[in-house]
Amino acid sequence: MRRGSIPYLLILPVVAAVVATLGYPIYSLVQISLEKYTLFELIQHSGKWIGLDNFSSVLHDHVFWDTLKRTIVFTIANVGLTMIFGTLIALLLVRVSSVLRVALMAGLVLVWSMPAVVAVQVWYWMTNFENGVVNYIFGLGQYDWYASDFSELGMVTALIVWAAIPFVVITVYAGLAQVPQELVEAAEIDGARGWRIFRDVTFPILKPIFLILTSLSIIWDFGVFTQPFLLIGQGRLHESNYLMATYLYQEGYAKSDYGRGAAISILMLLIVALLSVFYVRRMVRTEETT
Amino acid sequence: MRAAAIRARRQRRLRQTGWNLVGIAVLVVMVFPVFWMVSTAFKQDQDINSFNPTWFPFDGTFSHFRDAIAGSDHPFFWNAVENSLIVVGVTVGLSMVLAFLAAVALAKYRFSGRKMFIAFVIAIQMLPQTGLVIPLFVVLRNYGLTGNYVLFGLILTYLTFVLPFAVWTLRGFLLGIPKELEEAAMVDGSSRLGAFVRILLPLVAPGLVATSVFVFITAWNEFIFANVLLQDQSKQTVTVWLSYFSGSSRHTDWGALMAASTVIAVPVMIFFLLVQRKMRFGLTAGAVKG
Image (cartoon, rainbow over all chains, first blue to last red; front, side, top):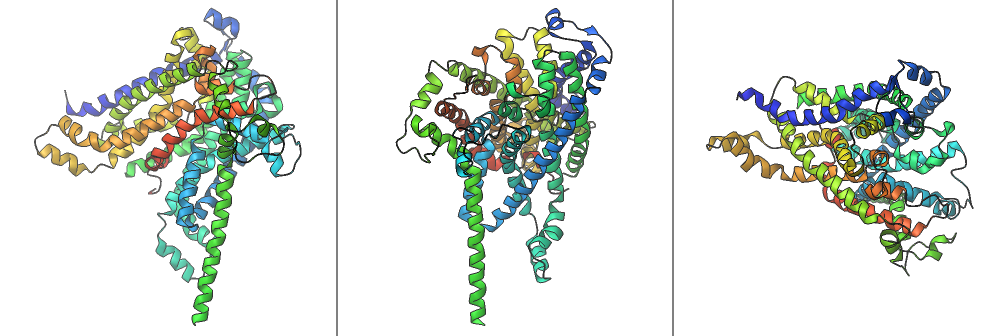
């Protein structure tokens, strides 16, 4: 056995496993998207070729475009709030006493570890209109947070941001430790304070971390499924509160129109692939320097 | 001069107290949902259902836990736990072996195609899983991986999504091991394999434990695929079981729901608290230097 073949033998199992479990479904995704494939064809085990009809049906559907726009706005709101609150809490972590810092860290890890399905149930219990504790705290009586599409998606946003904050805080906080203290002191001597120091000293050093956290959050939030699906409830999902993932699930899976669902899946995968190019390139480049 | 120094110190102490108060407020808001879940799980029904909340379950009860996991209203809890443990156990075992081999290749060898493999690993991590629900459902259906074999299909699916993460983090742990140690072992006359078993393996053991815990958590928390692929009630995993818990009636048994949530979340929380310190940088490792 030649020495040079060892690394290839080592990566072979992973490549084989992933190609087998991912390659074939992706191939069949493309195939199904070009076929009429409903419950009938599922039982027959074979679809009927219809070319690009599924794609043209989706792209001519205003629901697709409305959902895409809604998901973009939703993603911007979620990522923006996550990054802002996450960064503020990380900066706060540096300033509090050490006992409180440990307590905050432990608290954040608890939040981080909540399974999404569990978090949804707790959220629904806290915000239900009959005796939700949130209404009690804010003195809102029996306010129904799930009465309008906007407020419903607002609740989903609150849940996602709450659950996503710990990862951002912990990563940014780790990065803050790398900001040279001399630089901050020098800036202070020059008369810079709070916001100026953050903008001109801290932010430029942490920029790579912010870029990666932001692109990861965009990719996650754009395709988020569990929280909107369960918090809104499958029975109450409809055209005007769809996000990409719930739209795809309802149109493709729940309505058993797998061909059309596959077309939506491919469009969604393409959008996310475009969004990920930056992240993947960046990670590969930093990898080369290690 | 002394008066000025005292004033400056008092001002600093005041500012410190201010930050601490903000920190406490953040801690309370972030941890509240977790607290509320556990607290509700132990409360008497009349305290849960009243509009004026009882904050602490001083005259608590364990009856909700009994209802949740052994009650006749909610059968299949133990089936769900068993299914989850099977799926998670096999996923962890297989993924750790495969990922470790690939991580050794990445951390210890230079080979052409290495960069492509890294891009492959990172890109798969970015795939939105929802986009693959439909083809996986159709493929597993067509191959008869339903009924008793459905858990096997789910394991294959999970493997695809945990492998990139596992390879990537294990590689980070392996990079942390000084080359000199390994070389010293080889000078002593050990073969590369001998060096690996006696030197590398003990050093990377904590990394293996931490990574497998994260794989455990990912698989334990997963909902999308489990929900679509596991339709038989006795074949569900814990997250799917919990998502059906409140059922279709609007009169939710909040106490039992929160008890069930607590039972599912607590193992994850304990694991997370144990390993998070080691794993903080998994996804963003290397970013700081960039």
